[in-house]
Image (cartoon, rainbow, N blue to C red; front, top):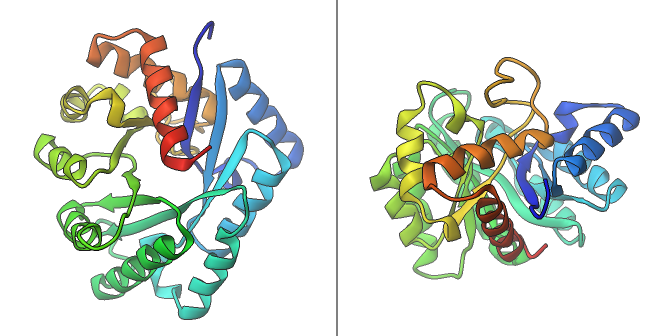
Length: 260
């Protein structure tokens, strides 16, 4: 993309490919589409360790470490300390993804909340921003983070945002960023597009959440970071902005939040 650059702020490269050679091809394809940086995100201890390994292999890749709410049943003080040690590495730029998931119902809410709050404290201790997963749990996530923000300078992003404008306002009022995925390209995602139209470009991030949520025209296929350009194009239409404006603004936001 001439004169443009993009940052995929949420990928799961360990799920996209297992072999080093294939990962190299994926990173190279992203580079050719103007993607200058990728954040690969952990969902448990093993994937967090793998995310860090991948980030150390590729200059353009950074890591986030954390335990996803669906895996919160495996959370412990020992796991928290392991994540904290991982978080000290210079290639780790965030704590995540963490949060609440009331859709899958794999872990009792009480356990999810305890793991979430412990990891928010861990992020504060490490000085890292947080990547929030909130599936059918936006109200509780916003409430919990509000309690933290009143006391501590917590920073972060609500990833793969699916809330309406009222939820978006609450998230923005917390000082958090909002990130959009390939869902914004889906035919029946008018609500997501309305919310994207409401969120200012200077508070927005872009992501693929690959290998999931591949944008149109790749729906149903394995997603990868090179396709974040399709998210940028959809946002440019929603915001009546150029792709260059969208890519530059969202990438500067990512650099500022994650200190890339």
